[in-house]
Image 1: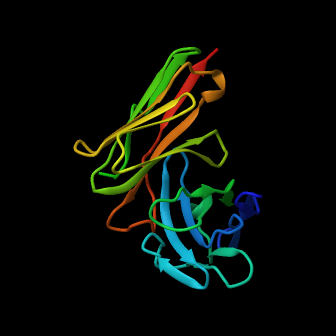
Image 2: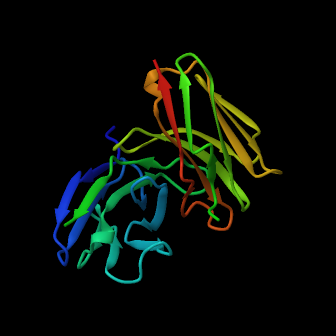
Length: 114
Length: 113
């Protein structure tokens, strides 16, 4: 049973370009969470999705960031017109439900904006 | 200040010693989870303790939870060099009921051989 998969593992973008980060949850998990980790800091919640629905996006910046979790395929975190401050590690987690379930994390995508 | 604050920020011990890390939080929670992160890697789930539990064990790990003090501790016994990592506590606040985890800034543990 494969764990949470994220790709790419490393992504380099120039300022103004778009970044697309993908996350495939563990088999049987329909809840996906995205977190961002700046250097030397803890993880900060961004968005929580279930299949085809955004449940909580209170941690997402209001502009340039969007997320989706389609009926088929991986969850996508999209960052438009990236800036240097977007450089961070982006982690995806999944769980089979909410409330009393562990969240299982992927290896992360390290985004570098040059 | 932020929900989920670990103490100390950094801890350096010798192999074989015990390591204790503390976490304090501010709001009511459903559960509290501890994670380990090796440098430049993803997070590994260590243990989940529910709000109605006081203590939980897993191998060399012992976690306590005191909801009256809004605090938790993680004890690693008989530490090994391979335990060197950052350790984070994460709370699942009742107000959001599973929609997110709130992480602290972490404790950097170094175990010297």
